[in-house]
Length: 100
Image (spheres, one colour):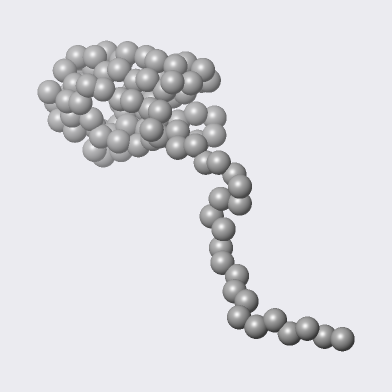
């Protein structure tokens, strides 16, 4: 005996039951614009790194921290700078900061 089934479709499942936590929302880089101190909050207790670049992608400074850090930005030139925040799993946030 055979049964025929008609009108069957397959659709992609995005999560497959796995919760994806967006770690980018847990990273705060402030104030923006910055004058002399840049604060970074990662709200985690694992080694995290922030790297500041100029617009030519030249690395200006790199600092590893756990949970929070304050970076002295007095030596940076005025203007726009790029940053990357990453942990052992890779990049978790990219952004721009203005130095006044």
